[in-house]
Picture (tube, rainbow, N blue to C red):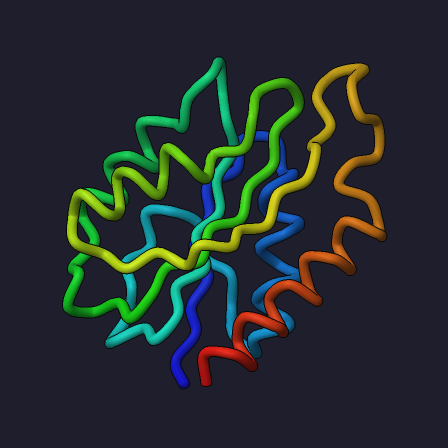
Length: 139
């Protein structure tokens, strides 16, 4: 099974999740705009919510994805204030005809004085468990 991890992170919060998910999957986490190489059975896609929306970099990346090279996208995200990025990312992926896993992983991320130390060890452990469950079920 070919599992790939791509993410966009300004503060490093989402990168922490991406690294744990990639370690669990036995692959390398690569920052957007790294393209999907070959056919990915599972693409874990990570992002954050900035000022109520996902970044233009994530939107552009989704537009660049080839639906024939991706079996399913699994979304993970962080944010300090806004809701998770999943609904926005799901809508954009589905409009491109890309299959999206209905479950997603989300945790708070540190921003200035808010949510200090997040994602923390428990968040990272939970992200690894989430990735392992998804991979086991989709094999």
